Image (tube, rainbow, N blue to C red; front, side, top):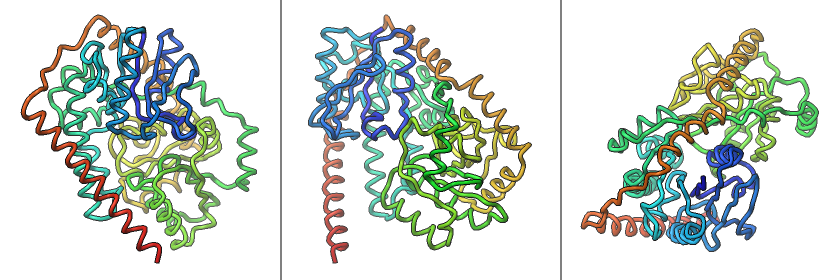
Length: 440
């Protein structure tokens, strides 16, 4: 079948430093004989199209890379129309809000069945905003932005979607809380792991250790985005409570520059510089190497829809300690295949790190249980089996046109654009003021 995927970002936008749902699922779908085309935002290097692993990707010129915008939505709809006239797509997959342009601007809207893949919701995003921004003023802008994006734009996608897929039961509960009307078409399909990717080379691990000047230390790893909701500062604070262990904490990731600066200042303030290495995001093919050479992975997040890095760690046979938040307990059963700790609790985190690094028998039990869980329940093949069931079910269906032309819709459109312009304007002025202050 011919499948069109709308997404605002790919690993190419992050210089290979990322793993995206549509790429993992898409690769398996392509291997099963489906024809896949991806429509996404522009690239900084100016490349407009690529063909890799039998998947063709269009990067739309004059759109903001890795960002939602009216330009992207209009151009993505036009690109889809041009392709659909010739190819006649069977299914559309929308990553978060990426197919909004298809529903608003395409000549073929409501013709091709749409699967909406949701990675967050209005309620789950609200849990993260206060961890990402530092002032009441910015929090207010974040709330307005999330209201407009989630309550207006995503709502329309969910109304018109033929099927809605969530990546965890926890997220599904949030979605139902925010949009109860999706219940008849809601499914939970976990992100799957391509196990063959995690056969790492011991020789390459030795080379990385040599480059980082690591020898016989126990390696504690954080791997992921650097932003407030990830709780990395609580992991750093936990280090002062770890005693009589020869270890090194590797913080590997990319993200918010201000938060990264805050972490580096915290490391100095706590005088743990000799115990911590901060490494800019690594290429995705190096992820198994960093996981494989580590003794333990820590995910200290304040919220996670699922926590995909946990599954990657299990696949590399590296034990995990994570916070009991969001969808994480769907992967980790405390004391069975890992440790769960309360969020924002450095002492408890340090206690579990110490126990696991000093108890080889427990560590091996966690490793075996975690790997078995991935093999039995979280392979990409299993995920795609579930996707194919939905795809075949929708193959001969088309969406029933939804009459969304009303006074309320017009008013909501006006409100949407008015407040978006206000947010952009105020943010622009705030940045100018911030730069001016820093110049003195």
